Length: 153
Image (cartoon, rainbow, N blue to C red; front, top):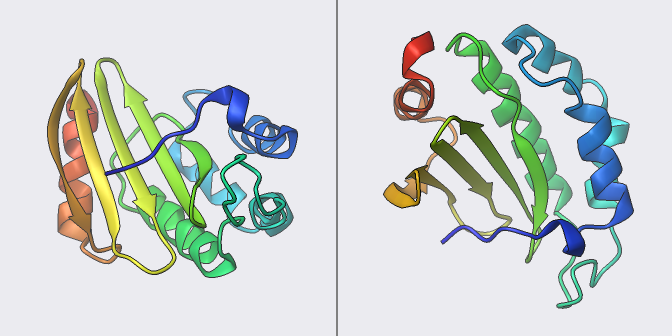
């Protein structure tokens, strides 16, 4: 299951990362590519102190951050049209969590250091689907984003 964090449990650095990297709502997917070379901003995630969440968690593993950057760049290249920017937060245990919200639909993807990535689709308050996600399963990933934003596909 995908874990989420409350705003109160995030550090100032993570909030600053979110604010700087994902400030413009509704930007086109081409603008996402600008976040990939800005690795110093992503390094905020890997430089979180141990116990950043008050539960002894390590910062996100650098390999997970690299996988998250590659995944986000690949999603931008899929060409699903206008997508909302994802919310990005660290996960307990050294992972990274993405969440896209479009109206009543949510798509969440979690990338972990020593486990398969997973996804969760929610419509309203109901879980639609969840499971493991291979970060190279492009047809599956494309279908997830087509579900998220059916009007733009």
